[in-house]
Image 1 (cartoon, rainbow, N blue to C red):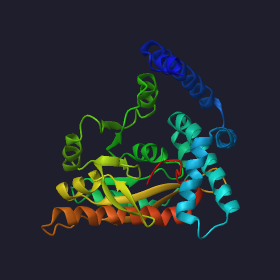
Image 2 (image 1 turned 180 degrees about the vertical axis):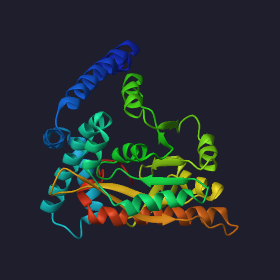
Image 3 (image 1 turned 90 degrees about the vertical axis):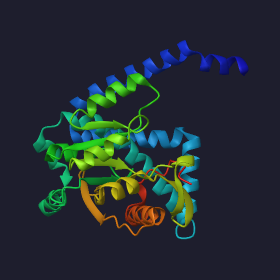
Length: 303
């Protein structure tokens, strides 16, 4: 066993393993680019169901998370069905992601269900000259928001955490070519600069922040929550818009939701002001998850 662990940690073995993953990924991306959207969706569902039955430890965590939140409301059978659909959603999203950058505008917007009034509203927010934070989560197709914003002409930067696999980062960067990127592990100071330049910052706020976050209630249980969005909003005076793309069950399209806009209020107590914004963001996500429980990524160790 110790011998196997040494092999696994060997740098050369690690590099080879990472490169194999890269080759498989880039080949998959090439194939997906050639497929029609509806075929991509069907293939993603099959991939998701396969993962549900094969990856036991992740399935166990998914069921535990669902039980924690909905155990008193739903039966074991209902929770298992939600879990299956969670995996289907992740499988579809993983294939839609490399497909989207290679779609024409007409093809892309044909699968995005949104209203002109929503987009007009987002542009109106930028007239305050304070920038805007687009705060989303791993709901529905969370990758769609960045592509959506870029195609609409928003000057937008995406906050991201790089993969430990440098080869995969090459793919990720190429798929994000329509947006500017900010590596949260290296440079967060540029976030404030770009907001003050009246740009848009797009981020996902639903991950477990562990020791770097603040413990706040999420579905009635304490969860470590990143403080960054609230800090940036209070620092610049910009609004935080909680918005999501959720998957429509009746077809292969995605519904754009603006759940709420949070304007920062400074009372002189910075900690209190930050917590108020973060609580509202968690409440927003809870509302959407309750409406679409099978579209959030329950695989995460959120609590």
